[in-house]
Image (cartoon, rainbow, N blue to C red; front, side, top):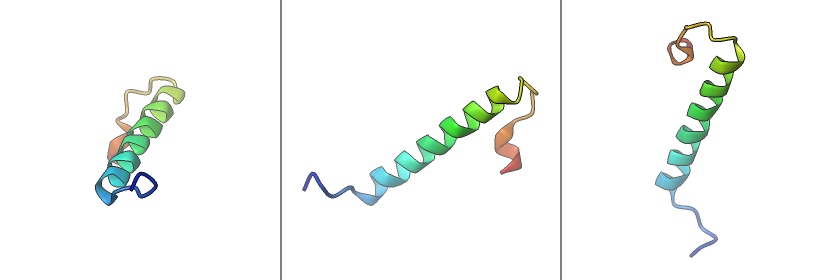
Length: 40
């Protein structure tokens, strides 16, 4: 049971990881004030 990850939890993990990556990239770009999410 514990070794199997439910699909909805895995999808939430992917969305969370993607949002974290977007946040890190936007911060890395020197505060360009351009929403990185609009370019995806």
